[in-house]
Length: 213
Image (cartoon, rainbow, N blue to C red; front, top):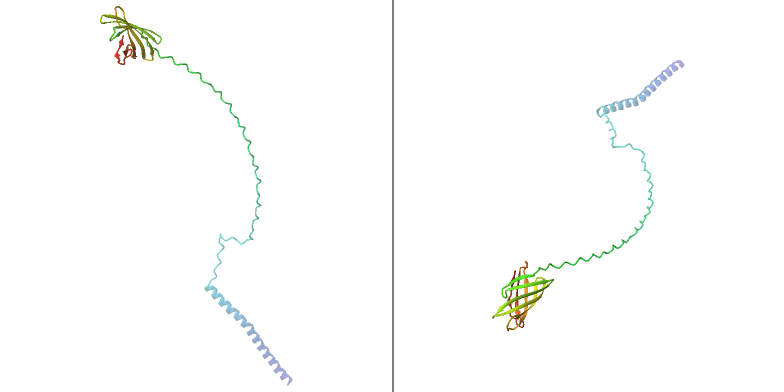
């Protein structure tokens, strides 16, 4: 019986052991099968949607590095430049220029006076002889009126081109009255003619008296 029992016991043990092995195999194979199935699914998905390679960083993208804030440069206040006030230039008062009194211009020589000396012919009393000395003149003449001969005389002064004079006429022979008066002559530019008038003393009426040479 024991052998039989023992045999039966051994078979039961073997069956139980085989069952345990099967169960253990299944327990082990289930996770493996799940892993294999997940791997197949992942592989299929990877084949349909290949992974996109990440774009390389652009040149503008600087690699992140430690940001270093530069130390602030020390501000140096420049030393104040000393202001130098230039010394005032010495003012030199120029010496007063000597005042030179211009020499007095020599007095202009008087205009040359024409020499009227000589024989002149009148329109009334015939020949007249004139003698000139500086600006003075003396003239003599002779004429006949109503058979009476008169000796005449003229004395006067020359101023510029004007002669102002006095005259006298006296009978030379016989009876007659003495007459006198004044006269005025203007000297022509060429000095060859005296143009003017005469009048008797106390009268206003003037008469022409011209001389030429």
